[in-house]
Image 1 (cartoon, helix red, strand yellow):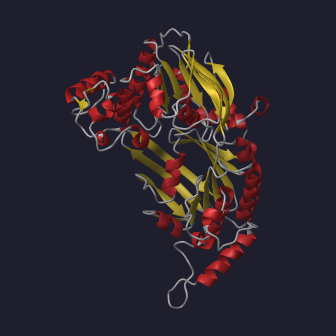
Image 2 (image 1 turned 180 degrees about the vertical axis):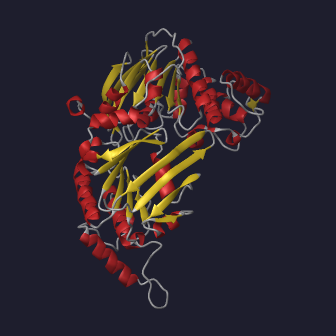
Image 3 (image 1 turned 45 degrees about the horizontal axis):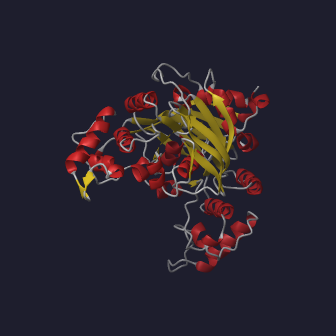
Length: 501
């Protein structure tokens, strides 16, 4: 067997409350594509960041061409021949194509100055060899997403990278553009590059990958040759765990329909979305990266405007033009990105909680701090918030406690429907249990809960019904009665039952 170009051995990485990677090993071989497969949150992104010098591992070693290397920076990873092409290309719109390709390693003349003529000539030669059809002298902003990906590939070739990491590279491409990318991957293989290909799409994996490695909960749980493995076997490796007693018992009685979406569409994000959630129900939304789940919820919450369709709340048509309109109607949204969209860092807990409820805590236009404190105390105590005081800066809290602050903030508005987008993302197991318990209490009190989650155990352990989305569309809505995780994965990934049999 050919020796691997890159070897990772015993790599571990932890963050506060989360063990992201645990004793992970990986080998990448020249002229081969290795598919990295796993659910959202399995540790794939952490591994890529470790390989590209963004994170430093807590334990383990990295070898390139048999030699141990340390990667304290992204530049150091590039220097040893490791480059990454991300779903969202990290390039500069105001620079030319040639400047983007050679940024940081431009050819120099004998005076140490950038040799612009040589740089443009070499960029043109690389792009022509790829049949990219791109003028190296135009500004990057003039190109579409697919062409920008080609520039990113050209950059990888220009630094003579031995290892090319492709992280969901086809997510924003048309089928024609995807086929063009496949051709480029074959060129990279012929050039002896080792490629790590990250994708949730099984048709892509089986089209281009030679090997595979499966991650689950930060650990490697399987690897092998693609040709010797069925899709069904890989799905089993991905989910490989039973939903057990860690989720609270549910006693809520499901009542009448509270919120109904009919034919919601958006020009670029989702199409013909219809669903209903009832009083006392937890409606789960499951899908892979790019499925459009969060985008749908943001439209329901008034953050974006659908191009067509309608929302009906308690029998009345509503058309929220803003988040404020949605809150006024009785719909609240706990976002996935709590640090950017959920809390106001630099402000104390009590102000974060009381912000949407200022009418309750003010009189004659003046805020009453005692009322703000009382409101915050009522809801943070229900969630068992762990903090030194309600005056503590919210940015100093753990991820789990920040999530509790966001939930408390919206519950204080007394909503009819609460949307929880990845409610336990990045929080420790104890905080997860507290959030799950509180969700059960909410529906027992008659609230309607919509839960977007990428964690199969959470979706199956908490939902009454599950909506599965793929590429901006709903592919099925299932009663959660003896539902198997493999069924959800197949639907989300577009794998037909006969393929998996």
